[in-house]
Image 1 (spheres, one colour):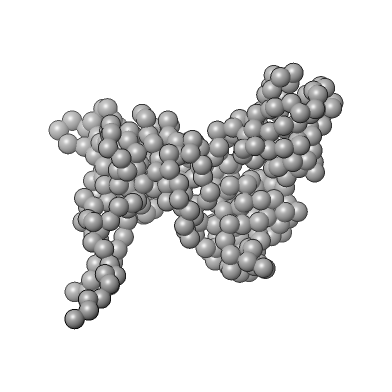
Image 2: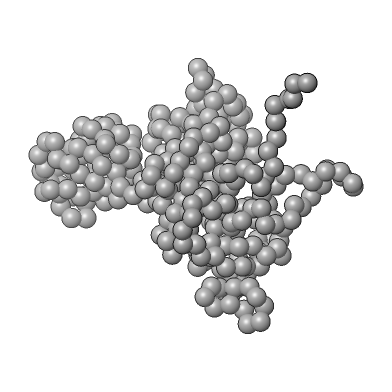
Length: 323
């Protein structure tokens, strides 16, 4: 008799489940009552305190307080321990439980502020990247701490000849030998995040082949009332026809009724923050004209990417919290 290959793995045997502790080491977490007013309480997302709060627990309750997914208040932690909760929801009366990483409101969840845990990230990430979250959903993303490049400056034009790490964006403050402190990138020229020219805020002269850095920050929100996605040659392109607020940035997620999850802007096309085209990380999706948005992310305190493996949904990462 020939046995069939095993096609399923019990979750208790599987490694790399989102929300699990990835490595032995110091870990700090506290139980919170979760209430997000219907927004999914997803394991592996970021949460903020709405009342109480570690290390000020609610007296006699056994919990640290109440927390919501996302938000802009005091950071409560990343929802962890996916194997410790009951499964919720069925396919019908008496039907099998649906697999889910979502806890209902009024559940008690463990929120971690120290340790290394598996999480989902929507796009490419590198070891040492800073972790950010969407205050609307708690979904995580990442940004390089600094952009490193070689450039020269003539009056208010920065000419970048090489990029060693990261992307250049409007609003970044640049530094380097001979660069006037507080110099900020105010507009894109021929450069669209990489080599090319950029307008800066302070007129000065800095010689060729000067190594410079630019501090990065989380993306700001944008909204488009008319945008679409087309695919060609295995590459998806976002076209923004009407931008109502904000500016698009490389690394930002794209949300819309017909947009695939974990869709991320990977490069500027004809658009450089406003109307125009943008290259996406997906392939094969077509979305007709509709309203689309991008989130305004916040930093997860004292948190960096320590591992990253790309997959069809973006990537499975390990993040390290040191609060």
